[in-house]
Length: 260
Image (tube, rainbow, N blue to C red; front, side, top):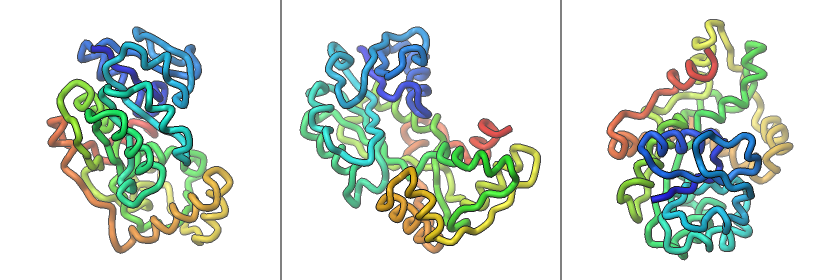
């Protein structure tokens, strides 16, 4: 079989490529910049919104949709009609929104789909890096408890789904425990070997700051969601262990890999 990996230079995609190659799977990548593509794979230049050339002849695809809107998704997935599609989704797909819309579009073109619904990626903590360097992370809801997942666990799940029969399966992909955001920051400091403190930021200030990059609606939704996690932590799933055969990697391990 041949597998196409979209987002192959990203946090999860590059590990999916590595996992497929280790398994001896013929791998193609769809990238905007071929100079950044992994070695030893077939490279097709382009954007995920127009994947027809990259889709030709492949049997399966690891699909990322990196946009805040599902506009154009029907045309984007049409070239994958009848093929295996493993889509990196989100837990919030249950409540509608872009992830739900993408899942619906995927269901229309194939019965061989697998949805990896993550609570959140640990790599989002990289956004704190400049503040970590200064020793203080200022953000909202330090006691929001998140079960963020290591990107390598997502990739391990994807490789299993791409190379085995996981048709019509929805997996909740999480870390092994729910860790408060302030504790995540402490663990990053521990990995660095220096104290890093959490400074609580007023929610409205956080929304205004995040809206610059995420847009006002998405930023408000994110901050309100964190507020809910103070009393109602994100769930912890055993799907990583069930599918991959190994337990999910803890946040402390992720911090040591990225900050030490």
